[in-house]
Length: 112
Length: 115
Image 1 (cartoon, each protein chain N blue to C red):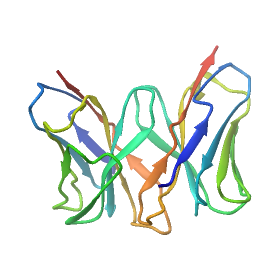
Image 2: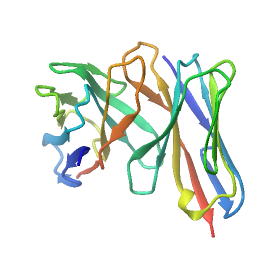
Image 3: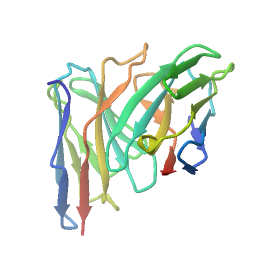
């Protein structure tokens, strides 16, 4: 079945440093979604990418979707303590329908 | 206020007991989902439903059961057959069955502890 892998699993940065997490799918994705889960909270949708090579920005966050639509990345510029949490990528399953396959997430900690 | 509610936030049960987790949404979403999250891990799909009176098994359905009698409600029962039920359970919903694929909205979750 479809697998979605994320690296790294953990990332510790000093406040102000940049951060990047990478997502790779075993199959081509029609779209990819990114979610953020704060410690003790629930996942919250950040963005969806649909087009090959698409790049979207949300303030200090930059999201990319690979040309082959099998990989994606999230880059945070100049991290802040509010960026702490786990970032998940997710893509639609092979068997259609609305189910998503989530990556295992990258847990980001930011030292002030 | 629209959203997804899950109750209770914390739940404690003795081994061998069935327990039902509640999930209600007033977003008028067709699709609903149940995920399990273990410490430091990702989300694993237990069951999902794309329409009332229909649901499909996810990746880890063994030991769980669901019903979808109303569009707004998708309760999850953790049965005594579930070998390791202690976990954080998240319910989610999305606008349509896809495609196009819409984002999922998550409830606050229920932390279940079985001893």
